[in-house]
Structures are given as C-alpha cells and as structure tokens.
Amino acid sequence: MAVNTSTAEVLYRPTDEQLRFLPEGPYSIGNDRLSWVSIQFSPESTVGALNLLDTTTGKNESHPLPGRPGFAFPTTDDHIFVVGLERQVVLYDLRKGVVDVLAEDIDGHTEGTIINDGVLLRDGVVFGCKDTSFEEHKAGLYFLRASDRRLFTLRSDQLCSNGKVTHPLGGDRFELLDIDTPTKKVVRYELDTDTGELTDATVSLDLKEDLAFPDGMIEVPGKHAVIIAMFNPESAEMGHAKQFCLNTGELEHVWEIPGSPQVTCPQLLRIGGEVKLVLTTAAENMSEEKMTEHPNAGCLFVGEIDVDDLGKQPRWEL
Image 1: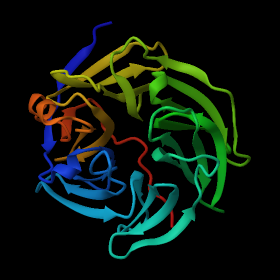
Image 2: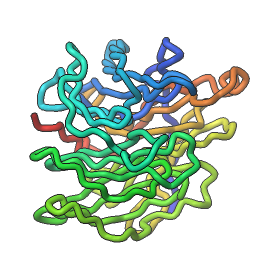
Image 3: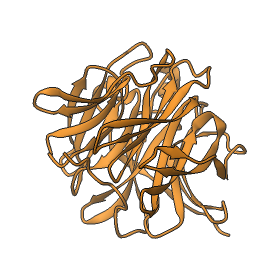
Image 4: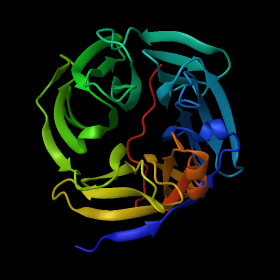
C-alpha cells in the first residue's frame, strides 16, 4: 500500500520563548480558533499556561497557570476550562483563575508525578500521569466522572501516559485506546464508566521499529484509523505525524514537520472553512546549538487532511 506524504507549514511561532518549551493539547474552540497548553516554561519550571490562538489574526492570548497543565478542555461556558493541573483537576475561569476543584490528591500513592494527557468522553474525562524523572512505572491512569465527581483509579503503573481515543460501545461501555509513550505501543481497553472497571490491555499498534516515540493521538473521523504525533528527541531534519489503520496496522499517511523533530500532539481544526490538521511541537531540552539546527522547534504547524468534520471534540458540561 502506497503511503501518502505531505509537508506541514508553520501556523504559529510563539514570540515568547517560554511558550515554545512544551506546547501540547490543541483543541478546537470554534472556527479558526484553538486552545493549547504550555505545560512548563523550562526544565526547572513548575508553572505553565493556557493559550487561546486566533488563526486568522495570529493573536495568541496566554493565561499563566499556578502549575503545569497536562490538559485543558473547553466547557459549555466559553470562559471556563477543565484543566489537569499538577495533581488536581480544576475548573479555570479565564477572568478569575481557579474557581473549583473537581478532584485532588491525584497519584497520592506516590511522589514525583503530575497529570499529563487526557480525553473527554460522555460524563467525564480519562487522563493519565507521568513520572517527571521518566524512571519508574508508578504513574496513574484515571477516569473522573463528571456527574458525581467520582475518581476511578484504572492503573498505577504508567511511566508517561499520553495519547487517548475513546469509542462508545453501548450503554456505559467505551473502547479506550491509550499510549504509555516509552512502551511505543497503542493498547486497547474496554472501560465501564458506571463501575470504573477496565479490562486487560491488548496491543492495537506496536511502533517499536520507529526511532521516535508516540505522543499525542486522535482518531480520523469516518475511518478506523488514528493520527499519532511522533516525538523524536534526536536531531532530525523533519519531525513526523503518522496515520495508521487500526484494522491492519498499516501506515497510511505521513506528515513531515520541517525543522521540528519533537512533535507532541495532533488535532483537527476548521480554518478558512476547511478542516486542517494542527500539530504542536516542542523545544524541550534543546540546547542553543540544537535550536539553531531546528529553528521551528516549539511552533504550531498546520497540514492538509482529507476529512470533512472535526470528529469528537466535546465540551465539559457545567
């Protein structure tokens, strides 16, 4: 099968170097507009930001946060986001700051972890944590149910929990596709959101032959396929995002990202009336020399994609 290849272009280049360190979590907040998070500003930083980008004007509105955000999703109130912040899930009002704590003491069984990636589904959010030293399989995977704010611990053995995709299976059951980045695998679970029970994992994609590491992930609307951002910590002329068929495991499409090998997250956004693929990239842990080699590190990119809708990008119900 022939693999399609296309090249993404820079959509937004942050003028504040801090915002280029670790961008992730792009999400549609309306036509031509997206939110994204700066997880942290430097290797030692313990704070980040929630950003709102208008792609028509290029204006980025940055809101400093009192911690490192792993994810941020819009709610039914345009001014309020649900944010995974350090070891809490909070409601953050762009005008007032944190206005409510939905869950706290996340990963209370251990130390040295923080919330990382997540995905919204009906009546809640599935999210995972990461060991900030990337040494121990001790971080958790959780489901927070919105209706009663009950937190279910699904696993406690993750190293760096990242991309997630869900599909309804009927009733309270969902398929969950999940990435624990160092494993280089996409695994499949079934989740019962009533009982909080998670089945054993089965492997959907094994990417161990790839030099880069799988990071963020989204589904392709209308296809049994996913797009995965590939994080390459080594020097490379191009970064990559890759589309895989879940039925066969075959590679279907590669987006090349020039001058930025550390690709973190994909998302779909309607820009100028057409659906585009938006990709965040990171300058994390790059020396000045390496930044010279990779001048687009930490930029947001846009690429072409042959789909007509944005797929599932729900809002948290208040």
